[in-house]
Image 1 (cartoon, rainbow, N blue to C red):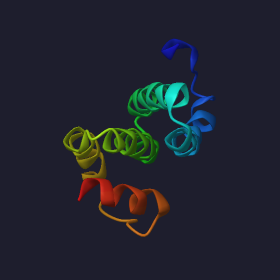
Image 2: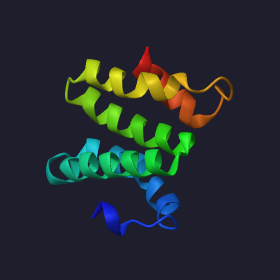
Image 3: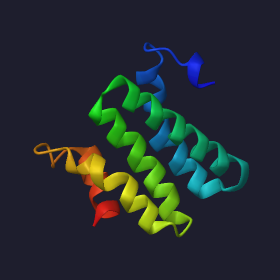
Image 4: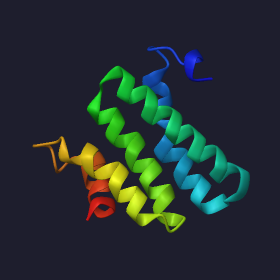
Length: 103
C-alpha cells in the first residue's frame, strides 16, 4: 500500500491521523489497529517527502496511540527528535499537541 500513495494524496491523508486516532481512541478494537497502521504509513510518507510539519502531525498521532497503550517511552523517543527540529511556531496547534507527549 505504501507505493500506492502518491505525492498528491499525501496532504489529504495527513489530515486523517489526528481525526482517525481520536475516534479510534474512543472506539478501540479494529479501528485502533487501523489507526496505528495509518499513522505509521503517513509518518513514513511525510519523512520521504521531507515535510517536517506533516511528519510532526503523523508522529504526534502515533505517539499518542502508543502512550495510550502504555508505551510512553517509545512515544517520547519517536516524537522528541521530530519536535526538536522546530525552532519557532510553538504556538501552532500541531506543536501544542506534541509538547505534552514529549515532556
